[in-house]
Amino acid sequence: MGPLAVPRAVAPLDVSERGLIIAAGFFGATIAVAAFDCSKAVRQSHRSWGRSTKANAYIMMLWVEILTSVALAILAWLFLNGTIPPSIGFFVGVRTFSLSVSPSIG
Figure: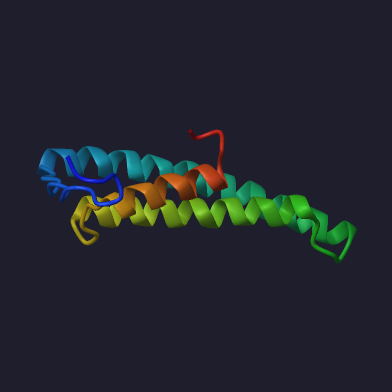
């Protein structure tokens, strides 16, 4: 057994067509929910901007959360399609990124 810093190669993930169809269904449902969330964020941003022309912390955190969630969704989809190969660095990076953005996910 070698050192922990040098992991063995990760076997490629073989995603079946059925698995991609299921993932696409969940991805579509997530996009539908995200559309409603974004419409609410637009209304809140517009209302907040009407009260004060400065951006407040809540509105900035709201849009940063939406953008990071989109980034994680794109990474997940690219991984499932095989564009991004599996690696320990990718998995640790995505997990660390998701925990730093949304601690409630973990």
